[in-house]
Image (cartoon, rainbow, N blue to C red; front, side, top):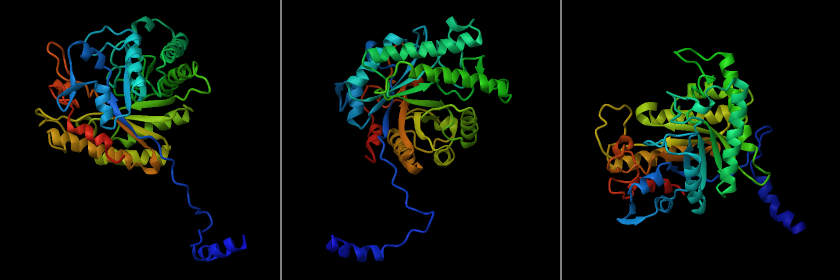
Length: 369
């Protein structure tokens, strides 16, 4: 013991003292960086003849993406979709695809739309079968529906790792009951209170079927990846009303939302002010086509340009202070053209080319590992 103290004494004397109140902080725990995409249409595209390839060899799209470092996949869930175009994700379809994701050993993020169709900043319409419910009944239905859905995934061994309660809910959800603002007006306190009651009802529903051994994180998703002021406004209102959640989800499409520098600023300020983990849960960039009228297309519209965009975005999220940049997920990476059906952006923002071959942008998901 005396020998050990003698050996340590010179080091202790030479070490710089830490001033009071400036004790060194422990390094943030290393978190799993989530990389992947929303693959909600995958089963339908396969059913309609779509084939995915790596190096011209056919393969499973999930496995191909995993080979590039993807470890997380998102699926949306509609209440009673009409099964036209992309509105196909009913519970049975989504559970089946979720089982594939979990069987592949990947993380699964479930995205509740709380609608029969697309819920986004321009529309957040209630499911038709909920249309005539008064507010207390709607609040109860949101909890019941959410709990029943989570229980169905759990019963099939496909419990989500993360659950989004609502999709791009900057303007609220379940209109008109949970609408924020409208007609260019700022939300009233009454609107905020109604919206938050519905949000808390959804969160209660996620948690009802869970036991102490189930680990599911709650995400709140808005569409302001490059907009700190709106991000601050939205989440400060949630904090004021004591909404408990784990992760902030953001959408970032350059042509709609802004520059990458604005994303970096938003990430930094969000961490400083809110201290939450953040995922860019939707993003995309084209590898072909005429985008000359689109804003903020700072990267070439090419295969290499698409890869550089994703490389830069992943680097920006990874550089978020205190390890709070949790991941990047691509929107509709499987959007390969299928004859006779609509494909978002004509397939130009997919991560597979028109013949189903994996594009080099996928390599960006493995950068920094």
